[in-house]
Structure formats: structure tokens, C-alpha cells
Length: 236
Image 1 (spheres, one colour):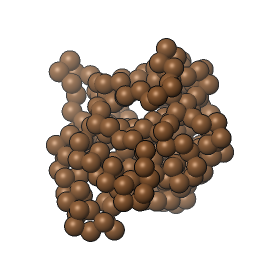
Image 2 (cartoon, one colour):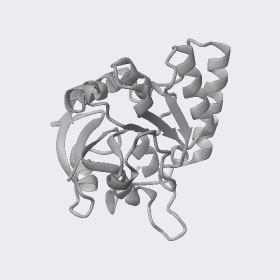
Image 3 (tube, one colour):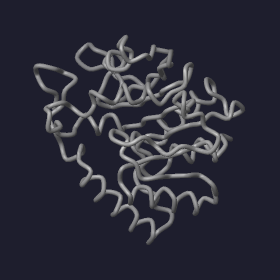
């Protein structure tokens, strides 16, 4: 539920806690070990994954061999989809702060016979992700950052000890990791397209709106909307 004083601020929820996601991925890892066909839940569905990969192939093609970071990689579905679309596996990194999430993603990648695809435990808000071989760390290094639902979960976290909301520092971290001219693509079900633009294209961030992905729409009460929003930004 959003804060009435700020519609972009949400009441804290268990979905914003590390313990919740540790429990989720502990269970999903156990399920996968029992049945390798059960790879866990795909947040926002496979259609959202396919749309993000389609956007990437059009705007940051695999032939450019981009260094790609999958933020909050979960069971690895998005990273695996990129690998399946021809993106070099040695230039894709999935990070998640849940260690069982990382174990699950690695197990799924092995089961699908995708060697070399890398997943690491890392808290994006407080740690820089590991560097991949050949990256230029002096200029951010990443060509493409992807977020499918991670910003939504962070928005549901409790405020820090100094009273700030964890999501407030997220756009700046995104910008700092990108090369000049590189891209950030986010899919969210908690924020509208305009709200994402407000968050990520503020002048101080250094990102500008690039494009959007069209999702199925619905009409209710005379207003038209969609179940999720996907927006791309470019580093200046």
C-alpha cells in the first residue's frame, strides 16, 4: 500500500526483507533438487523476460558483446534467456543478495547445460558487483543493467537507521556502474512509467529516458493502464 503523502512510497512489507527471499529460495532450491523441471517462479512471467530480451537484441545486440549485469537475478531466468539469445556468457553476471538464489541459478544453468554463466551473491545496495574479465572499471564498466522486480522489492524495505529509504540511493548506483552511452532497462509492477522516469531521469542522476516496452493494457473506471511497466534509460 502506498503512502498517502507520497504515492511512490510504500509501506514496508516482508517482500522487502532478505529473510523473506532467503526463505523463498531455500524452498525453491529444495524443490529443484527434488524435481529438476521445477525451476522456481518467474516474476512477472516469461512474457516479461522475452520482451526484455527482445528489447536488448534490438538496442544492445549480442554482436556488440556487452557486459551485462542482471540485478536481483533470482533463479537466473533472465540471464539464461540472454545466453539463449546469443549473448556471450562470459560477459553476463547475475547478482542476488540471497545465497540460495545464487545456488538455484547455478544449478539451473548446469541443468540446462549453459557452462560459464556466472551468478554471485552480492547486495547491490551496499556492494559493487564483481568485475568480469576485461572490464574497464575506471568508467563504470557495464554496457547494460537489467532489473526485473528488484527495484519493486527494495521499495518495500524498511527505512535505514538514518531514516532514508533504500530505494533513494538505487538510481545513483545504477548510473555509477554504467559506461557513458550504456543502458539500464527496468521492469516494474509497482511503479508506473512516469514514476520510473521521475526516479531515474532526474538531472542529478545522469540518465535520460530512451524508450519503453509495450505491455498488454486494461481499462478500469475509464482509465487505461498495464500490469507492469518497462522503461529504458541511457547514461549521458
